[in-house]
Every structure is written in structure tokens, then in C-alpha cells.
Length: 301
Image (tube, rainbow, N blue to C red):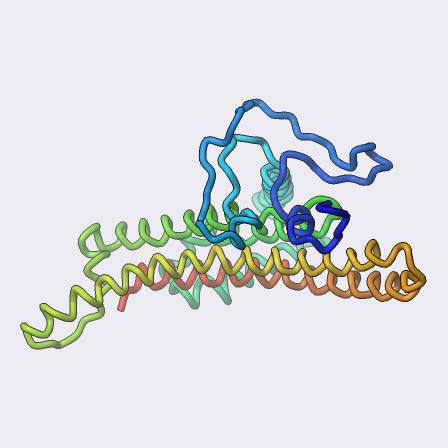
């Protein structure tokens, strides 16, 4: 904590950023954190991302490349493991023809069918949608799993880091470009980025290259925004939650604590319920936009 100020930006952002340790109660560990084991030790970062803008660099949006095993990596592995265990078991039951029974099975099946019938098929088309369902299902449940793990005390949300959301957006971008090229060929995919226009020759020579550049930039920007949208929504909620809880510590030595503490606890509880809704909403939005981008690639203008 910088100078004992619980509202210091560095202190607040430290609670929502990635780290090489897991924060715990001081009753669990005297230092309040458990260091993660590191397979590779580096004296200095291999790369340090600096934008030149002090306000941006102070909050370390771009984490240094140090080849460290971090808290968010651990959470991603846990999310992937839970998803694998749950859905492998579900697939085994379905392969034996067991009838749906139980709340968990019916809940998961309803979510899978919703993504298929109300997200993938309307956005991509009935003929092509089923090919991309495994990808969309995996994206949805992985993002959802990371979001929900962010609600666990002292855990943190892996989707609140640009490295995570950027990697997910990059995978979506590769899927979009790859599916478009697979259907129309390398040259055909890039030609399809320019909508067909009945233009006179001289005007076409001027406008078509400009439109092509704009469309390619738009394709890149759309996927960059896909990453930033998820990052901003997950980080913002956790930051607001950290600020609300910080009011309790800030008023600990005054009589105002008796009024601030109940209000902060109530506010944090309400915000956690909102974050639960946002966890599902952002997973849906990421999946829906991914389906739209894939649909636009395999069914161009």
C-alpha cells in the first residue's frame, strides 16, 4: 500500500492485475500472499511494454514479459480443467443414450442448445454453423469459467488482463480469417472484403483500394475491440468492488466506520450479484460477436 493510502491507484490496480502470487488472508499466511513456484527465473524482463503515456504506464496495462507462472495462468488452467471434467462426463452420458436428468445436465444442455440455435445458426447459417459449434462452445464456457473464478475471494479474473482477452481475440481472428480462406481461397477472401459495386473504371481504380484498406483495418479493429470490451468490463467491476471495500479500511479509525461498514458490505454484495450477471453476459457477448465475425467471413457481402 503506497503511503498507507487505500485509494492509491497503484494499490487498487494491484488487486485486479496479474501477479506471481495469490493474495490470501493474513490468518492463512503471515505475509498475506502465497508465492507461486517458478520454473524459470529471470533477472530482468525480456520485454517491457511502454506506451510513453505516464498514466497508462503507471497502471501497467502491458505486463512485462518475464516467463513467470502467474495467478491468472493458474486460474485459466483450473477453468479449463473444470470444463474438461464436466463436459467429458456429460459427453460420456450422452454417448450411452442416457436420458437428460438432473439440474446440472439440463442446465448445461440448455446452454449448449441456446448457443447453437440462437447464436451460431442465425449468425453463421444452418449449413455452416455446426462446424464452428465446438469453437463457440469452448470460447463461451472458458470465458464464463474465468469470469466466475473472478468472483472467488482473493482469486482474481483472468479475463481482466489484456494478455488473456488478447489471446482469445487472436484465436477468434485466426478462426475468422482461416474459415474465410478455407471457403474462398487466399485471394478470394481478400477480394470478398470489398463489396461488389457497379462503378465506372476510373472511379473503381480510385475507390476500391481505399475501401479495401478500410475493410482490412476494420477487420483488425473489430477483433482488437473484442479483446478490450471483455477486459474493460471485467476489470472495471473488480475495481469498483475494490474501491467500495476500501472505504471500510479508510474509515477504520473513526466513528464513521459504523455507518460506512454496513453500507460498503451491502454495496459489495449487490455489486457481486451484478458481477455474476456480467460474467454470463460478457461470455455471451464474446461468443455472439465471434459468431458474427465468422458468419461475415464465410458469407461475405
